[in-house]
Length: 115
Length: 114
Image 1 (cartoon, chains in turn cyan, blue):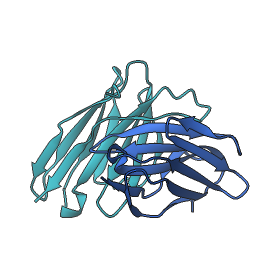
Image 2 (cartoon, rainbow over the protein chains, first blue to last red):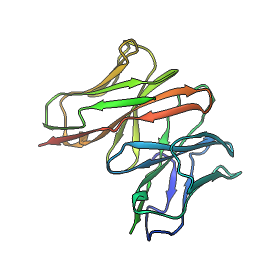
Image 3 (cartoon, chains in turn cyan, orange):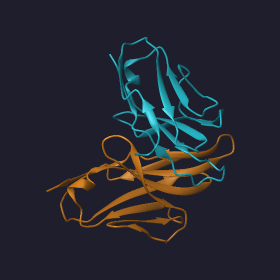
Image 4 (cartoon, each protein chain N blue to C red):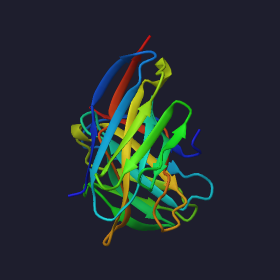
């Protein structure tokens, strides 16, 4: 158990809908990262938050947004869902001392299926 | 463009075999290279490599980094069926505009048959 908690484990929804994925980082970790893993692609970095503020942005679509709350949990919001958004969405956390060489600890992921 | 390339993409071996997984990278401002093992769901951390030529070892797994040639290898000796997983290579690199970033390769799917 990595200490990173993601809910829900599975989500099945229809095209055009909106969903929210939730992540609680390890105790003491200030950074939260979101990754998308599709069948035909590796782990794609979406976005990183550090202590409540956006720190880095990757290949995140405009239909997707995220935030990190004062208690450091994070939510990833996916709207106007398309079939191609079906994927495993991972949250990871790290202490993030700002010097790099960070080990990321991953949650078990949320499997999103868009029908 | 920053990229991390793993090979092979898929590997099937018999128990007891030794395997070598490869990871090459092209990134700006390299900081470290990490190996993860992904079984059912969450990737779990294996190694972090920051210096060339220093082997990291954990049981039957070992890894080494070559910062001149920009690659790393992950060796698994005396493979067991429990080693079956996707092995992910990731590179931690720094970008001026967005800070530290972890870029992953596509992974190597290792299957160990009894």
